[in-house]
Length: 323
Image 1 (spheres, rainbow, N blue to C red):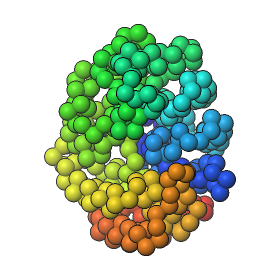
Image 2: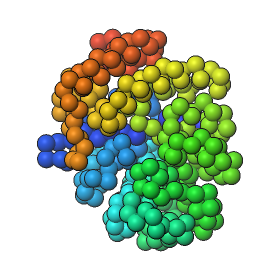
Image 3: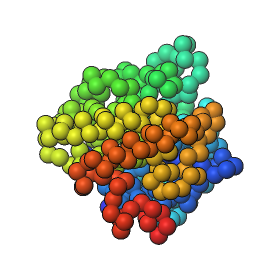
Image 4: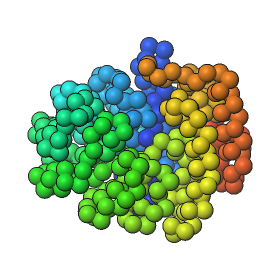
């Protein structure tokens, strides 16, 4: 299938490997995307917050998308984050991704003038993008992440955009961390796809009608996340939460992106995966080694079907990367 499922949908906010010249490392990214899909993930969100997307040039982001699709990654399984500071850059990215036939584009308001942005200003920003792209086949996911950009996507803004541009607002990715807010979106906009970015809320919001998750943890625990999504009830899914939360606690000792990349680098025995874009920095060696050891021990302690790193050699990510 070349599209995302309507329910229990697991989309990885995939992290981006980086070359020494600070451009995306397309071969490593392609290998990682293939592994994550083989591990049970339904789709990928490219160049979002976890993917450090806003720090790459428009050309780098478009070239990377071109390469992934040319290599056989189904466009319908991709959500492409098109956030940027200038509206003209957002329009270029959104037009390019939509022309490829991606599942949707993900967009948060730019993180400037936080204190002065009203609901009307937020509406006008999205409206400016939609009017300039001028494609009826574009599907936008509104990205609610006020901790990053400082601007909330309120239900009033969602309603106004949905009414002004019927069929073009695909849904909301809610990374605000407030499960009551997510539940409110699900109740008020049952015709839209609501994705949570907070993995611990999945048992509750899936039961309430959320489509699934676009999340960062699936970068390093895709099999556990897939197992959670596939369990039949909210009660069953809650059984997985202590495992998920303990793994997350290890990663959260230091900045999430650098921690995630350190785990991937260790699992692949590939130090190039540790690179992050400035102003972020790689983890100090002693802390990195301790975190990796603890995370590998955590993964090894999972039921075998839920492990993503300590796998039999024939199913190891190292072999997948070299294949």
